[in-house]
Image (cartoon, rainbow, N blue to C red):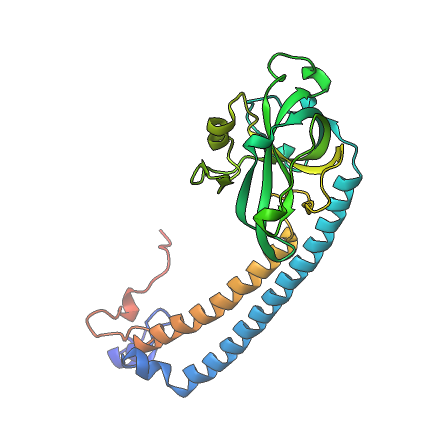
Length: 297
């Protein structure tokens, strides 16, 4: 059998041998090469399209979320109130599911404890919430007449005014109140000079006494009626409401795709600067004779 010469073996191209790479260069020089600039234009166009699609999905999330919120508010307004005693007791932890729950109860306002909560926006205008303590006399439901509920204090937001002088005196005597429940806010700067920076039961109990409810009530109606000068508030909302989550997720996905396009170009520039594939050296390049498949045994 004829013996193959070293030249013949070298002429056979080894498919496993590394290909010859480019000469390494700086990132700037690699980035301004025509091929890299063309890729940059292409990927920036793709990132722009992804950004526009994400913005469109965000707009859809706002539109659909606003429509859903309007339907939800209409359902809350039409819902019949339940007795406060059926859902919440004084000093009981406020559950998230109770936000915007419509309840009814009976009590007596304490005008001496009324405070204003400044820097609250209503219909785009800055003003004050009128916050009045209501000494509960009848919660209805399971806790009706119970010692734990009778005499407890419920913070009541009776409405919004543009100026402190617009706040009225609450109705006197026994009052039947219907309103939406809302969770107590985090503590602010306390209660002083007829002002409270937060509707916080932890702070109000020091000024009004207790026991006190851990949430507060946003008035929908009362009998006898209060002054028409107080603007009634919309149903409370939890954070994140007003956006459609599905469209919001689509928007995030499009923006992530756009970011990947830019990162892809940067990765290609970095590889270009490094010279592509490593150049084989005589010392490290495997010999064709050493490349063999599994032994036949």
